[in-house]
Length: 472
Image (cartoon, rainbow, N blue to C red; front, side, top):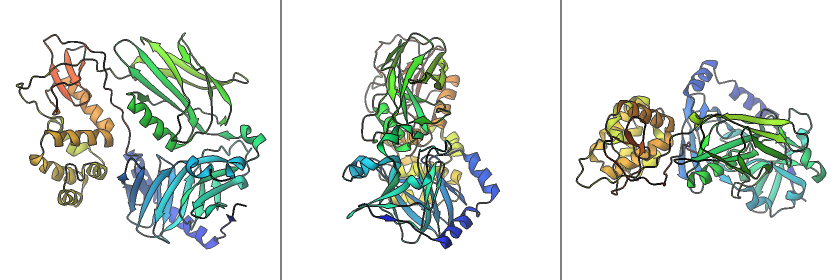
């Protein structure tokens, strides 16, 4: 028998409500203007997330004051009673659930978190789930929060269940996540919110797409992003299906043109982030016009999702590999060329510093930069240390900027291609990858090198295409 607990903390519920009401409307407008999804947002604005161990998916966030904080990226919310430091880890359900009888009576309904916080610091936690409540086919009493502890698993009845999240008041923490109690015959009638992910690989002549249909679980999206990045596929952002879909149902992938799609049928199912996810591979070939992709219900043929892909959605490939001679004159590094823009346009300094701590920045330098009052003062202090950086250090700074501010770096690249100003990121070898544009400029998108090209270069089919992703 699985233990179940049902908290009845009326006083705590009042405290949760009062903290949510502390957010003034002006703060909410200010937070929306920042448009940073990797941060938690609270009464004082954005709060950056620190990386403890990226490979183990461990992160830390320090909330400066009591109040309500939420992260739009993963759908996780906290109500804290005081200044608090919280560690957040991400786990695989299969590692815990397979050892219990719950896999036969419950279905996974959201991510599994490993949260650590000081006792009494968290008044409530909002755990995300992907079950659609708006169809009225799911009873909220079916929801439980599973606590995986040393002696076994405990099921807790949440204080509240809303569309997109469940609420635990005065929570205790262990690996926790949302489960839905369900009878096996009814499992395939449960409607969930889902997302479609599209990735492309682009070389000189051909375009290949990968199309996923998955539950709206951020941990699965993150795992797919990382997997596709390893194979140099780049994500195209398109809207998700408007309507909820049935878990376990099958859907047909088609296109407006006669494209090769393998497989043409996808099942919407939950797979742990550590498992291989189902996708359709779509061979486009030369893409010179708009393509419409569709997903329809196999059972009744109803259209569930469609998207237009334009040639402009795809970034140019980088097919050229020239040789740079050792005696060639040194060019200005990307971070040096764009120093002024980086000082004024970088919006979140702490995540950048976290990536460089111990690699480029010493403990003393790290603290000195963080001690500055404003973002621009922090960046000025940061660049004041650049006199001691060698080329390898600047390469690391550049890579950290690409990860924390990908849209800014891409904008600077595009401006650089337009102006043709020379810049270079240091290369540790004699070979670098560039793209020859129609204007005759060569741009190394992996490092920011730009030349005006007047000589003939040998072609290569290899590709090194970057992938943009956030802190998480």
